Image (cartoon, rainbow, N blue to C red; front, side, top):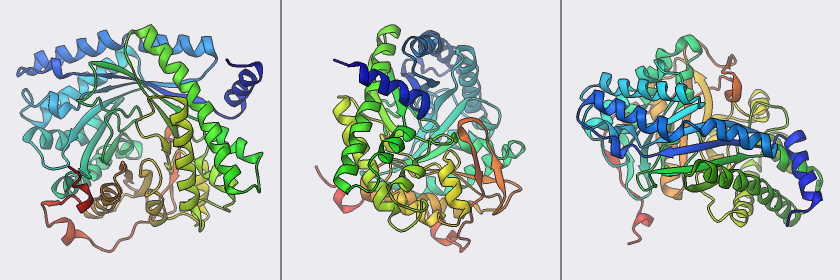
Length: 454
């Protein structure tokens, strides 16, 4: 039973501490849309998505009003388009046509984003995979709500270094194609190692081939709630610190579970997972970095930051799995620079560097996220940054990702404004020593020895 105190407590979390359901994401399989005729394929894709998701936004708004819980985004994730379009798409332009139809249906059902303009190439690329990847710069520059992701490696298969090299070039080309909006296209493009099939968060969401025909996944977030809870135990030992985070994560996840179950029932779509991720926003008081400071660090990036983040991530997950039988996605702590005011402050103070962020990704839930770098950064350097992050994911058997934004025309010390949930970011310096000969070797890095568990 829920008592009056818990109701009051939850209301306080929502009104004063930025607790929200970050997204309801409907996953939709497009495998039954596959056709060798491009126009027929586009028509099938539009009809399937529209019929499946036409009530998604309305239902989310109704639940938000009835329960008083902010639901920030409504989103759609579809089967990786490289799989769906392979039979019909013979050129990059053909794949761009698919991106445009995704964008059109996203507008028509009024969702914030649609993810799944994706390819899974951890061991090798088909012709369709390569065509889609090469089409990304144009697709993201000619659409508004489409998000793209590419899985480049896994613990089981190693890292596809040909794809890593290609993605460095694609990211730079996407930045140039969207330079009029401060290279915003790159904010809708992410590369993964060990990408999960059930991720509701953009830009990495796609509907995995192991999923049902349709599914409802919910992403819930509450960095402000955790920080406020930790203020009450300032100076206490690590046991108290851990218990406080765990209990708070439990309460936050229950809110997500409630919304997910209700959305599933009303839409008559099976419930998939709750993703409990401490995903910050630019709002003051909604920062993962502020949680780290509340633990006792002067700034995120100070000595001890990786240990504090590891503790936070683990306790968030432990609390979440007690609250829901179906916790999944990327659950844990996110460290996107542009979306977290505390991270931005740490970068400006000189406490946080790209190298320290990379170390932190060993223990957080995603990786190098929403990091703005100089627009003259070389493609090979971007590929090197990606390769390092993929290696961390592969060896540690965890999901890692890179969403880096080379802002054309801007350099270190300048600031870029993305707006909305994407926030703003200082341009961070990048190690400029060359890795080109390494990246140009080609082929793939094999899976690590501990991947052999059959």
